Image (cartoon, rainbow, N blue to C red; front, top):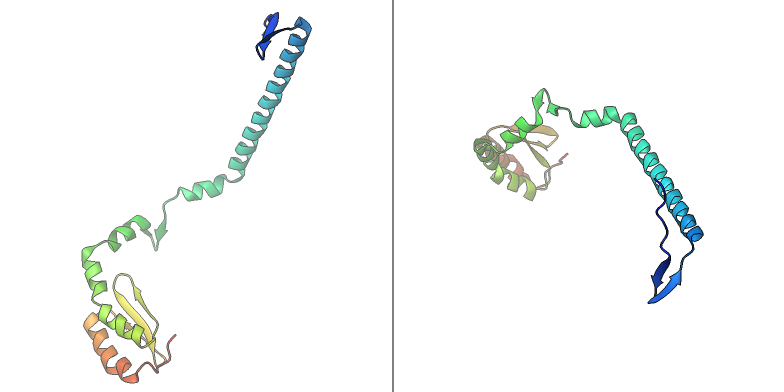
Length: 150
């Protein structure tokens, strides 16, 4: 693109200052050099981004794959966690969990509704809340928290 003709005078601080055509040409060349340098920098950044994408294409592809646990999609598991029936079954263990906590026995409530803990060296696993509560009342409460837990 040909350079534009330079203005004969430039206003600065309210005064008219004469501008020579030679200095305007130098300024235009300096601006063109700055623009070229900027374009080169942008091209280098874009090349770096593309290189990063190519190097990490497999990692990026794995992020977009279907997540599954034991062949079941994670979204299906999450939907099951919000099932009211399962929530009621899990909530039924609350009394047993309170007593185990008071006795300082570590426990776990596994999905969908299985209470597991270790008492006197034996691993106990319950799917029925009534059976779990009966065991806790008879054995754990009688020990007054002196049992060894894992």
